[in-house]
Image (cartoon, rainbow, N blue to C red):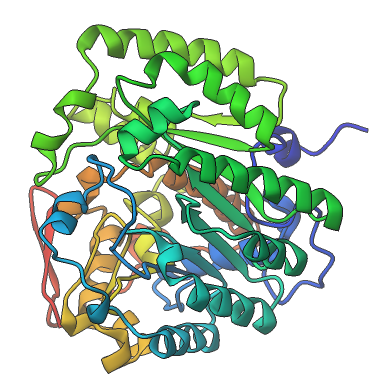
Length: 453
């Protein structure tokens, strides 16, 4: 018997959700989990919360993005925080204490957050002891909660990896590796021995996963393309195949206002960009049929031009014209981005924002001082959601490199809406509630500025 379409389409795409179908009873959702590629009720919960915002209801956050620190042990010149570190802008004393972070996560669990994504800013494992306690707390609350970590892996000790694998504390670990060899990686990241540390950690994760017969954590690799690595993408794919990495995500090197002068020696020339795309074709053929999913969406995004072509790439041209049987636009596909509807970003000081691209926030959004619920339903984040639901954008949206996540969610929301339409519970654009009496967002050429609380 042929596998269902949802499985055939996505069976090679790695993910952090459980690899086997969810055997729990339906908690009360109107759409069955089998409609979606993960076949998991926790994922349906995520879609349900996005749906509720699109039909004029409220929902708590599904995902919390945690930035434990903006400090880092490496010296990557293309990091948006690299200059700030050199001038001493980030200090350990300004970060939340261990107890404060534990309190934030405890409040998030009580509020209904299901996914916890730890990244940097800086290197999260500078706060390793605290993070391991947080991961244990999350899994103790519900083993189905999803945990992720992005790291340069420098500070992993063997006993840390054993704890993570044996207790299945982390669903997915993303390793930042910017070269197939130490000569390239250590050069661009500025610290000798950093490649060896990352590769040794990957090898030990795989060894212990076999010993404990565990499918967790899923191992991914993030790779920034520079003029030192563009000609070796195929070698990086081979490295991932050897190390049990299930996704290699390729990123273009981005320039930021404070880092422009420090990355000139790593930029691709026009000819090197052309050769990069030829190398990508070879790498895709090499990855095909292996366990490695080669994610090139963020590289492809840089080829999209401004104007209508870029708008189609950002939103997905197939969704720009999506409509209901009556011909009215479906609200879900008018929404520019779903991230502010289900995700909350917490910076090292405890200040909240609507996504990782928006970055560090202001003291007025501090979740320790105000409480997570008050910030989530406060004017600022509600204003950003209103902007997205109206099809608007914030200025930060144009610096985003995570469009593949938006596209994946919109494909699944189309399935969700199609199913809900069949049973008669959906709303079209004209059904949305009116804006509040005191608007907290305004438009200028479809770009929004929002009022802080």
